[in-house]
Length: 397
Image 1: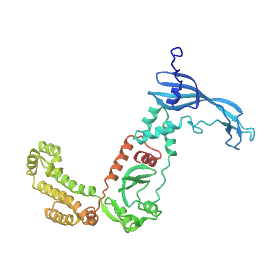
Image 2 (image 1 turned 180 degrees about the horizontal axis):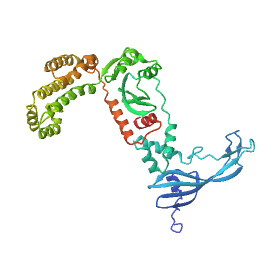
Image 3 (image 1 turned 90 degrees about the vertical axis):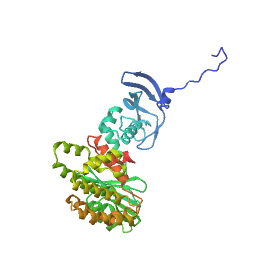
Image 4 (image 1 turned 30 degrees about the horizontal axis):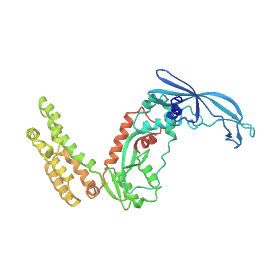
């Protein structure tokens, strides 16, 4: 190149740049079918003693160290170097040289630890993440324990509450609190008991700022809202209400079905979705099949009509219209004398005030239910968790 008048190409340490190890002195490189081995050393330089602050460059000895790093091209990356131990002539202490990728007392790099948590955020199980990265389950659990999600300081203006089966900390159910306005996870509590929830809510100073409290038909949650949130509108989410009508219709179908021949019972069971679907969503063929089913039993036809009335009530445009349609449904259900609808009527008598609030409230419990479902997915992917609260926050925030 010099003879041709060309400038020599600059030499770069591409491997060090690729692995973000520019401050190391690369000595050797080898690989197998499953592993990549890099041998290196660090530049010797004056180092501050962590005990007394004295600056020293005196080396006491060297100790071999093997560090696991992020996988490269599907292979485990192992870093090998002789770790220096410095001697401090001031306090006569010995200490290891600092290395920016390696925390104290660790055998894996900082970025490998962070990447293991990143995999948990994408809802991998701890076992799958550990196997992929070539580290142990306990290593990931230790890193998970180091993550801090402190208790929030202020309550959101729209507070939603639900519970999920956690089976940890000695409690069967845990409480989940969300900010329904910003669609954010607010907190996870180890218990849903009234005493524990009262102790938790007592610590907040802005309880009067809560404008909506969205919940299901749980008297503990309703009583807490009445006691602690005087300016909040208590809202029973529609999702928990509409199930009562579908359950009642299903119970009527099962009762009628038991009185039929085997062939008809199988047909009714397989065609149950026709009964549960909105009539306006059925095509002409499905409507004909539905009419055949309803002609088999007067009770089933009445129950289906009540279900449609209930769906009309749930689609009300405002609270006033919802109140009118609710009264009409209650009268029709009472006149039907179907015992399967008694539970639905009792629920409406007890909770109608808070159910009607949902028609003027722009918020629902949808985000909370979705979060609850995501927690169930995390549980299904796992074989049990330590620091389950951290695991949930890591995946959902």
